[in-house]
Image 1 (cartoon, helix red, strand yellow):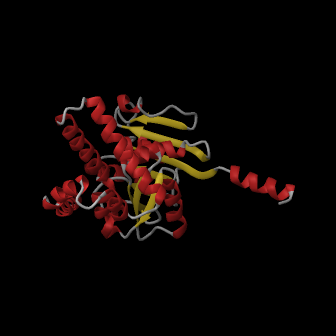
Image 2 (tube, one colour):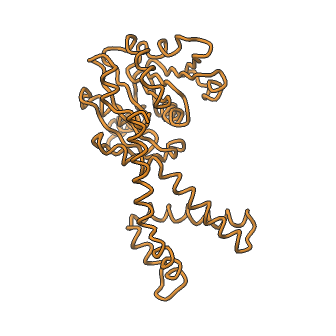
Length: 293
């Protein structure tokens, strides 16, 4: 490779990802996860980032950064309108019951080519598109909490007015904090029940195995080391080997051994059926939220 070619390749590799001016309405944990992605050193947001919160106390939790302006509706009733003015990406991170009122508030101030991205569980794209100007696109996003450490999984569903270019832009935004799976909106509730709620299932399993370890005489500190290290190590093994989980499980399970006996008990408890029922319950609740229940 010649010097000029090498220099060009290095320049291309160093070039930051560029995003347009972005508004973040409701800077909770998921909103701040997206914000962390936008504040990566290899990312540039032209026009800056404007975040809003309901309270001054919540505003104080938003990381300070020269590119971030934070407003609170507690002290400035027009904070949301100021935030969305001129923004091409508008992320709605408020509670589901607050969405309709918020959309009515900001609709007149949105740029004609704005993309409104919903983080609200259960609120359909029809609700967004019905409340927004006809030129404004809408996308539903279902990220999960590992996005906070750049290891998230986000389900994305595009609205009827969302162009390929707009959807690619939103996809690139969420790829800053992990992996993205594009799905039809009819599957977004199922995404929520798997990856959205999935970290809670994982933490619950960690809690229960830790409690079992303590019951066997280990100190809480020892139990945490044994359980946390095992789960993190197993997840890393799954990722780095690329093997199917069933194959990795088989390699741990010697015929007639201790692991086989433990798995037999889990099988008798119908763990697979339990996960099906649990995720079905999550989907049902998401649909209740969509209906206002």
